[in-house]
Image 1 (cartoon, rainbow, N blue to C red):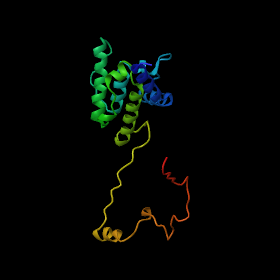
Image 2 (image 1 turned 30 degrees about the horizontal axis):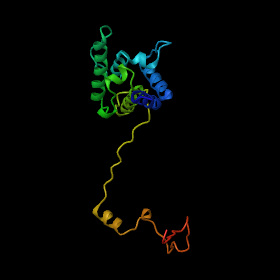
Image 3 (image 1 turned 90 degrees about the horizontal axis):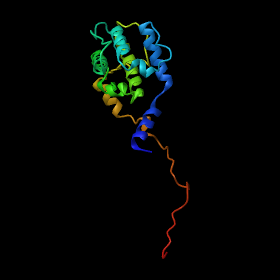
Length: 184
């Protein structure tokens, strides 16, 4: 098998139809409209218009112009605008798919993962009342200890350090013993 086919097979194995369906349902709920019947998930997302519409629902006015006609560069511009708006919304750069991953359907799993990252980011925006996608991210639980508490903790032996309570490994015989044969 050629390297290109191996890479394509590996990327396809990362894709989860359940996650694709969950992301699609989330976008349909936000937009209040179903995806066109008979079209594949990646084909609906390919031109970036749906993604831009979703982003404008999450953050109104974040993408002022959505290209609905024009060549492939205009459609790819939609995807780039969506990516820029997501980063401005707070999605980490590392979570954002590359334009070619969607346009050429090279890594649809990466596109879905980006949508989940966007869905997680909505939890951090109190103006957004739902729906949400993915688990709620954890909040920081910062603790402040006094100097006295920190010193008291240094005198204790933590349970993670373990205690053998006088136990030894004497008498244990696991596996075969080591045999040294001289002269062979």
